[in-house]
Image 1 (cartoon, rainbow, N blue to C red):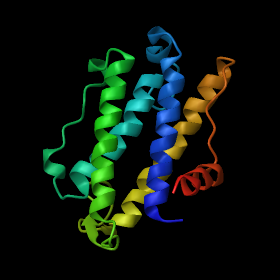
Image 2 (cartoon, one colour; image 1 turned 45 degrees about the horizontal axis):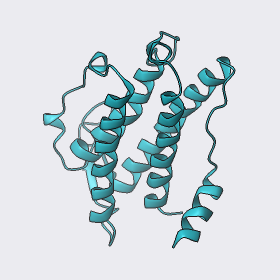
Image 3 (cartoon, one colour; image 1 turned 135 degrees about the vertical axis):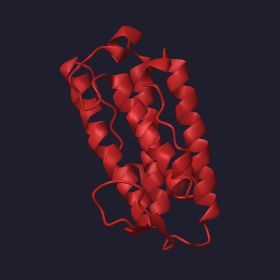
Image 4 (cartoon, rainbow, N blue to C red; image 1 turned 60 degrees about the horizontal axis):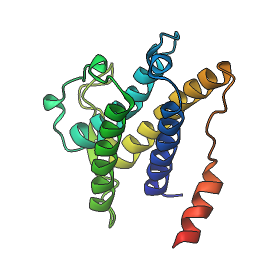
Length: 167
């Protein structure tokens, strides 16, 4: 497995969860549910924000330019789709840029209780990003199950074999 495979798998999962949310009435998507970010909309936005922040601000050393989005400004499923697609495009640009190497380049973490100059590799940062998203996909799955709905499922092996077959 490469970090590129892992990140693209994460993008495929996010698309599946967005598809699941599109089947719900908007009132259900924004309904408070005591999730980590309260509603399904906010959890989904957090997934996308995490990627956007890493790909477009932390890795290019532009964290000072980051502005937290107002989740309430996302008022329908189309606004979630637009943000998700824009972030996905940025991520693909990043993956292409590092296609021939550079995964070990170090970046400084701009927050937390770490030492002021804690540095991680690009590969470690992207791995962290994907693993954090996995936690929140579980939340969305549990929410859907509590609504007696099927949660999307795409195991990594199935994803990877399908991708390899397309090549």
